[in-house]
Every structure is written in C-alpha cells, then in structure tokens.
Image (cartoon, rainbow, N blue to C red; front, side):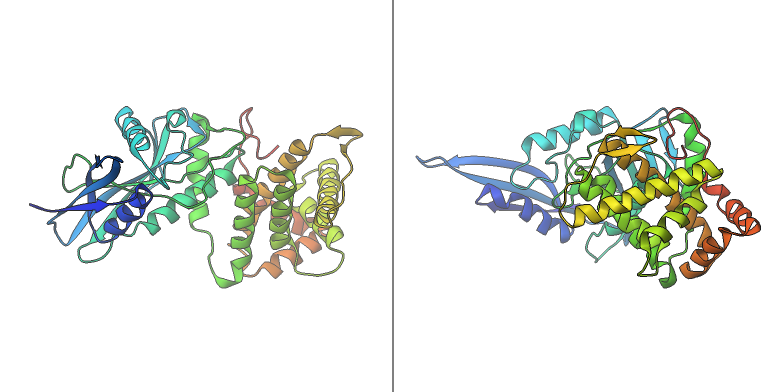
Length: 378
C-alpha cells in the first residue's frame, strides 16, 4: 500500500524546491503535470507524490553519471557494493526524459547525457523514521573521483545522484540531487584501459586505507587543492592551486621556499641525476611563476631545454609531479606518523643514499606500469 499527495505549485521556478522539500520527508515524485487557466493562460504545476509503507530498513540503488569517462570493460567492482559500470540504454533514456521536463534550477543543467557511458553505483540503506540522506554515497563517489584523478591524467567528475528504491516498483519513484554551481568537466578525456583496471583497484584499496588522523590533515589540504586545480580551466588559477597543494605536502618553513620545495620534490620523484635536476628546475619555474601571478604581473614564456612550451603543457607537467607526490606521501604517511618526519627524511636523503633508497622502497607501491595511455609516471 501507498500514501498519495497532490501538490499545487504556482510558479515553475519553485518546482525544484518543492520536490526537494517533499523528498526530505520521505516522499517520491510519481507524476508531474501542468495546465493553463483563464484567458491569460496562467500555468499551474501539479506534483503527485507517493510514499510506500515499508519495513524498518530498506535499500536504495544510488547511481551518478560519470562525465568525460570511458573504459574498455563493462564493470569495475570496487568492493562493498561500490562499482563503476556501463550505463544501460533505459537509464540514459530516463535521464534524457527528465532533462526534457525539468524546470527552474534543474540538477540536470549542464549534464551531457548523450556522451555518458558509465555510472558510479552503490547501495544506500535507509532506516524508517529518518529522512533520506545520501551524503555518505556522495562522499564515496567523491573518493572514487579523487582516486581516478590520482591514478592517471584525465578530467573526470560526477554531479547528479539518482536514488531509486529497491523495495517497490514505481512509474517514477526516483529522487535526484545535485551540487549547486556545478560545471561539466572540460579537458583531456579520462580513459581507463583494461590493463589498468587491476592496478587501479589495487591503488583504490591502498587509497581507502590512508591515514586520516589529525596529524595527516596536510594530505586533505593537498587533495582538495589538487582537485580544484584539475577542475580549473584557467591556467593561472590552476597553477596557484597546484602550488598550494605542493606547499601543503613539502613545506613547513617560511623561508627559502623555492629552494626547499624544488629540492624535496626532485629528491622524492627523481630517480637518475638528469631527471632529478629537470624536476628541480621545473618546480623552481612553477614557483617563480606563482609569485608573478599573485602579484598581477605578466609572466615570460616558459622554456624547457631551450624550447618555449605552451602554458597548458607546462601545467600538465606540474600536475603529474603533484599527482605522483600525493601518491607517494599517502604511502609514506603509513610509515611516518607525522609530516615533519617525512620532510626530515627527504632533507637527509639529499646526502644519504641509504635513506633515499629506503624512500624509494616505501613508495614503490605508488608507481604504476607505463603504457602509451598512462601518463602519470612519465
């Protein structure tokens, strides 16, 4: 059995707000309709809601379209009911149908459904008598997005959550939610090849086990700024976010920042002398560039080995240094309780080969095999 409520909404701008308000009370939209009234044809909007009489704990299927993402397999199981899977034609048609009828501040604004091939999926358990809250599902999806971005290059994201009850069938019966101010990802398409699925699943397990103590708060700052930089389309904003993320990882001092940062990044990421020096010089250029941007000055063309490169290519180089740095610090944080201890080891390793080899051994699991589509470790 079900309860039914028909709600009259005057202005079409209030439709989204009314739906959200009723969904928080445990109701689900069944039917939407509108009708004109009078000579001026003022339009009234009607929403028919349904609420099932269900048991104490019930399951909901929660999905979200993965934008700018492609893979060569149908499903990637990430454990505990969380997975990435290919979207069905029926689901895609459902999204398109909802986009065509959505009004006002629609959660589907900016969502390019036709180009979506995969969704994130998990199961949400709801206790009777409490409001439906999918915030934990969203946090799980955000973790997957961050792990994908750390694993390799590519701009991938999600927005709309589709929450569907698994305990009764309905012609509509599905709730949707989105983040305000969301912009669809722009940039290099994220492609996960079949040979990369196993390494990614292995990295995902290690990423989920990362330390989340107060002493490792610096990792949260670094990850936040890394994600902001990935999402930025403006070169200057992107570089500022990336350099703040580097500072969160490598710096605790207030003096000789360029010198300390460039040396520490180079010693951790570089394997051979030539590579170490190249990383050191590029980080110096990036930090000098940050100072120029912050002070509103025009920056000079960027040159590497005597050749001028485009700003987006330089940003890509710095992004990959940062991606690898965060992965390495996640591994090191499992062996060193405090950030200060990691930084001291990096400084010692400049003159101590034994310590440097120890750091390489501890971060080995954060390195992935190279192939022509995997750019993160180049």
